[in-house]
Length: 336
Image 1 (cartoon, rainbow, N blue to C red):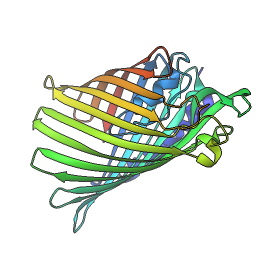
Image 2 (image 1 turned 135 degrees about the horizontal axis):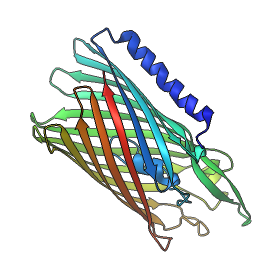
Image 3 (image 1 turned 180 degrees about the vertical axis):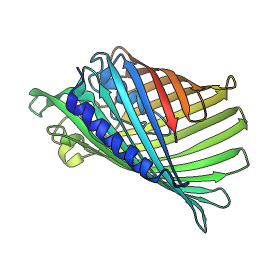
């Protein structure tokens, strides 16, 4: 069952942001947003990977070596606090996001997600923004650690993830905006998997098109290269260095007066670049296809109900069968 400590930890973090927003809510330049969602996933090991597969998040979460670790209900509390102010250049935005995934039964997979954003929009509507994203102590599941002599031992595999991104938005017309994105990040593993520590960088363009007041399209592509800690990896047949290509399309349409649909398709290919003859990743690649449907119903000007379904299909070339994953959710979003 859900551990009391995990539940209190996430509620306390959300409460801090709620209290801060209330303190400043009287000032017109402050705004806050709160979300509460309940998910069911049929694979707890893949839940975080599939949820973060997005142009707006971190689509290259590491390959999970042992999927199929059972289903569970997941609670997601979240809060965003924003501060905006006009300046001589245009408008400055500072924002902080905090959320968490709290697993009902398999509580080892519970973790928090945090982001800080700083953005300057200029008078010509161009925008530059800096993002810092932090995910501490993410449990990936049990995994085998194989030494050079062939001996194996099983341990918990955990990851602490940091990335920094720079985004440049330039409107081409009133309805068309192009974004250039660059990222640099670190994925730091626990013992005995520290040889998997990875540095990565990402480049890619996004294109946002407001087709009409009721229809929007977002498409994008990322090229990413990740290099594991070679000094350590050279002693183990487990080099997770990679080259990644990721593409996504997101279509948003107003179906009824208060009902909006969002349809997303993602494709990702992850090619491992290990050169060790005895490495299980030698010549291997993973292909991911994922689709998502979400319906948003506006209760009033400040509350929206969300209902969604996400389906992913993953195939590693060294495995016989593909791995499928489904997530469904129901949530409410409040804006103040």
